[in-house]
Length: 312
Image (cartoon, rainbow, N blue to C red):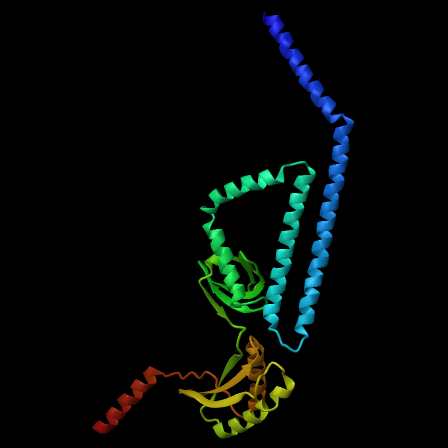
């Protein structure tokens, strides 16, 4: 009985093995492999070409749109450009996946139905993802900030830098030292956008309290009037405000310059450098730290001598 059972199991195993071998070595199987491989390669190639050409068509469309006399916001167009290209990639590659599954004779309709039921269950645990997408939609719709803007975003840890990409789920920011922040849109609680309005540079410089303030105002004002022709970053002629503060042996003079967004740092450095040269050239002393040393022993000895003289 035991021998016959072993023989039966051996025959069953050999039969199954033979069926598998016959299937994989059959002409029908290899025809299917060749046909499916060609279909998959064609789907991937067509998808790549659609995305490649589509992105360039979208970029060309927005480039032409920027040249129209309607004066669209450049930052908003860049944001919509990135978003449109991302949506195109998602749609095409998702369709490619469906096509590949169909070419492998996988029931896509049943798979999608099952995925829909599973997605309903997963959706209850994906509230953060839904929150990210909704928040991203309103960020783009309300134009809170765009690609190229310099912003400070308050999240669990504050991030500050230039926006490089805005998606429906995340926002990417590059910091001043090159670090990249990838922030889920649902975690953005507060945004400070430095690129929407013109910036102002406040240049404070210290001069000696003995300096002629009227002469300083005349020299600096003449210099400031020449700047708008040299620097396109300036919106108007910088203003010499006057004496901002007096402390000890020094005065603080202030100059205010209005520039295009985020251009005030460079303009402030230029004005500070040139004003220093102008003041030095005209013999106007800059403030410098002074130190006074008192010899307490000599003061005491002189006091004693005076007291002695008074007694005499």
